[in-house]
Image (spheres, rainbow, N blue to C red):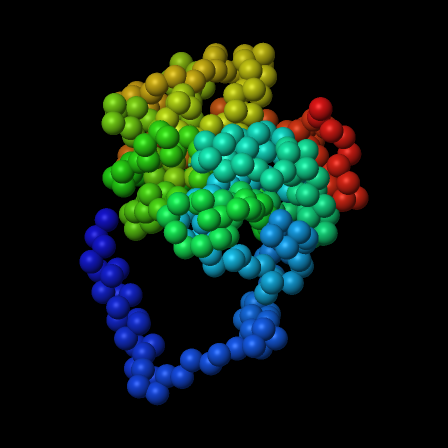
Length: 356
Ligand SMILES: Cc1ncc(COP(=O)(O)O)c(C=O)c1O
């Protein structure tokens, strides 16, 4: 990535904004009510409000006013990146795979040495009530567990109370059937300790997607130090070999994708229909991957995205593969009509059933 041109573009923009203002710039000191008014006018200026609800255990409740969706500045997650997060798709009144995402969330929290103030079931009850309050029917939940506010030190010992934050993000997504281009990432990938827990340190992931976008691609693919395929910046990758096998990289050094796991559970249906030969996770070399018949990204919110070009060369015949589309249909049907166990209704605001 050529950082120098984008740096000078940023500098020029800052200088242009400063022109004629710098000398007599006066910074107001706001009262609380003035600040609220200011934040509301900024948020209300947006054509649409994409965040219909937020919860914070710091305040202990839900807010619907986007101007009030704020975090304490001295939160260890804000200034040191000491926090973990997760997501879940919200579709037609159901939360998809919420339990699986919450299991990973609590696993990430324990890896990050943050003790959750709430059990799995309480987190679930809060998210269901927030989703209900949002009245949103399509989008996603994103939620964080932070070491919490306290001070600005490196050590979290001054942060007595871990905090759970959550937000609803409205998004009009649909099944993705058009193929995209990808590139191999040159941004170094995270070591496995940090890649296997879903923590908020996503700078390498941000750089990896910026690098892809600068090269005209949708996103990138990481290859590990042993030459094995890893993952994309916020997605897993999957391949169909020329022998019609579905192969995904093992999850030992990357994030265990909830969508990828669900895909692995559903894909045997295509073996029963005799259009797929086998399903497995294993190490995949770059050479083997580049020789695949089909390739796709897998992740919440996609849920599956065909890849037709990699590093300027066609994947397989360069068209969206038939098995990719069959897998995409399987997972989309699961999201829209799948079993009760994985689709949690939220619109009446109370958990319908406990899995315990
Ligand atoms: C680095 C990374 N890999 C893979 C994934 C895909 O995981 P999931 O299917 O749970 O969204 C994500 C998204 O959460 C991610 O951030």
